[in-house]
Image (cartoon, rainbow, N blue to C red):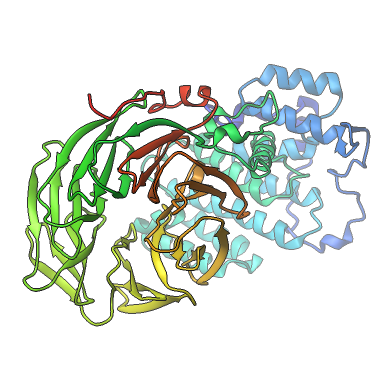
Length: 580
């Protein structure tokens, strides 16, 4: 809900009464130093107007501030005449005449006059005043240099900038630009920045961020306040699962339970045995499932939301533990139970390569972010990196993995994540040659990496799911309870809008959904008749969830309110066996 971008430079939006401007210009040729003691002046700051009239039901909004930010928004949106009329009718000026004069002087490049006006504004924070003066003089220096007035630029540097005694590192850069004009790029100049008006407009916006808001109303202040209100409404919405494009300013936002996937839209029953794993592709166009029946099925998610069978992949001699989508979704890796890894073409359904090592079984697989290499965990507890043609590029031997099929690679390709002991997860940094452990007190059965690579969702044998932060301060930040796990590997996932929810399978045949931040259990979805082994939330449609079960079926879940689906692609209800 961001504000509309300015199409015109602020030059057209500065309103200075002509009488005040003429009077101020007559008195602005002072040659006094920019700074004396700021405390010497006993004048009241010209931006102090007292509390004044209050508006709003709680009486906390100052009317003059409210009118000012509306006026500022009108000028930002290009409604100059309306902004002028609001100032005239309300009697509340957007800026005092001195501030308007200062802005106009900056836009006109009257640097000495603007410094004198800045001093007259009586900024009590001397550091802010010095920083603002430095920026003005730096802009003056840059323009002189750009005009080829080298001696004038040098004079400004020596007699005006250096005496301020601030940002000396930047002062040295300015000095170096005189000696080597090619280094003017350091000053922020570009070949495209040929318009003085545009350059000064951008500079004024930069200067505006430095000065107190009471002196110069920040650009897009109204839009920022509205966005903060919407953010707060989203934060307080327990069931929030709505895209930003659906938020409205016309009513308070509140999602109900009907925004959470809670009813079965489709049952896919093509597999002939227990379904152990499933995963949506990165863009959500496909869903892949693997089974104890030794097959993999690629399903296509139509724009209507119907999930239909695309390919049935066969060739594994043992049950298929896991699948992994290539970064571009054009290829798929599948890993048999202590067997081999197969690489498939998604469009053709053909097996493109088989990765194996004599005498050693492969138990997990994953892609490198560039799609040019794969990683596998081995039964000899090592982790190996292969190129697409099966050449082994790297191998980390020792206790690097166990016979659990979960593995992840961060998006930058720097870290490989695997379960290295029954109660520990290895974070292997390839570049830094550094290893770090996440240690639990209970046996780890599976894990899932968040989309932003900052969190791990860890399933434990004691029927708990722990959310770990894996950035600088590695720690557990939340725990989720309620599901059942006694014998089998049960997997969970992140999902929903901005991955605000946690979903998990369960041995009691239900799908469980928690609020990620609070840990509150929101739903337990019945429907399956066997243990739910794995869940996957659609990456683009926050209302679509898939679950895989020992009952040989896959269920596609959606919200109670089917109108929610109408606003998304992949969102219309269909009931079928998945075949076209």
